[in-house]
Image (cartoon, rainbow, N blue to C red; front, side, top):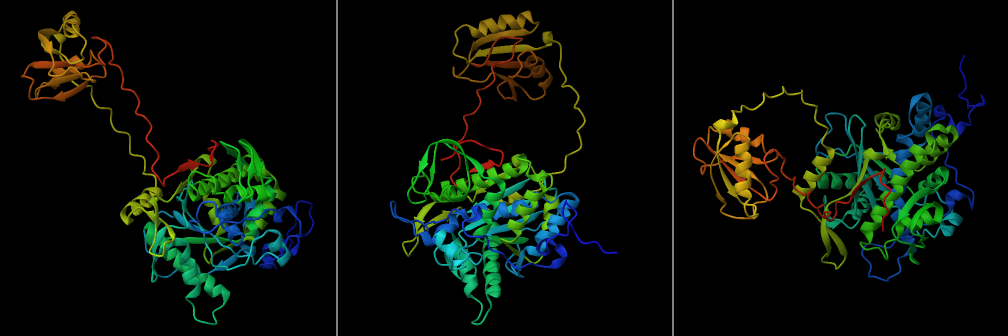
Length: 529
């Protein structure tokens, strides 16, 4: 006897949630619902300071949030039998496209079942009614703008995940079209099919050219593709009840509409969109906006992992519905398998980075562009990013203790390089008290040695080791200046006396961050611009 799938109350599930029922028709949210609140209005690349951005392009800045949050709502919740059910619901609802090209995507593969996923945000308003589009000030729909692109690498064991944002103005070579901004790749591909091609065929062509461009840029093979439209962000941020962000300074900007105090705030709807789209008034413009997008995504991840979302079956179902109905993925992406692969991921093991770049520039059309690092540097960056953890080497046998001799067998010449008067004589007296033979004392060729050194002739390693045991931390080196059978002790400013360890060196000052390589994890909650 067959059994109808049911919810927790034992009642039959609605047809749109039955994974056996195939893809249901899309439903629009009612006017004025929280899922429809907030609008994205983002300017094009590189406008002059003070110029008001055109609201018709506003949704682009928030697409990073929509993309990643949509995918993570699926991959983070898919555990156990209920997870299997949610996976079936998602798979039945998600759109599919022929995104993976048969050629031009031949970078480094994933022999150990690691995965490279390209997450893309587009400008499609297909899921919005005219009234909703007007309410959200989204403008006209080109369906070809992909100003948010994030490459996600997940290793085979699912222990971590790396998210690398690609700035939209990155100046790159697009196969068959020469040099242009990265966000033009999808549009070029979309226009390639002959007249009469369907929208689905054009969408697939756009995705394929974008993947070939990113593969060439990164040196990686792109295994899967996920594209998200405007509505997903609103639905997801509403379901989780807002996301906490932390600003170093209060933010108020007429262009984006952001109005937030310094410190921590929980945002959703209009303020969430304003937060991720602001670039005016930020020190690094679009790059700080990328950090804001990544920060919001990280906050959503923490919310889903720490606020009992994973234990609320109703909320899980809402999240999966909102994500699946907003996603378009390649033909072979198995959402449930991806969820299983990432079961062990934690906020601290999800890292966000930005593609390494050199600096701003103008192209021959006087457009703002971003110059990236050279191809070799970029390929090295992604090779390191995607390197699988090395297998733990077997424990090496404990080496035998170095050979030493009796102190009375060691002749020492002491040289003062510390700049402290009389230190050589003091050290000589202490050495003699410890049983060593001191043959001479004097000053070193310089008086600014920072490190105490023990120098010995070839074959006198045991003599040097015996002396080094009395001055822990001193450096030891072979030297032609030391006669056979005699060890030189050069006192540095770190010398504290025979029988005492030298003063350890001060820790190195932290290096300045490399431009274009901002990095943090989803567990970080420090304030941002």
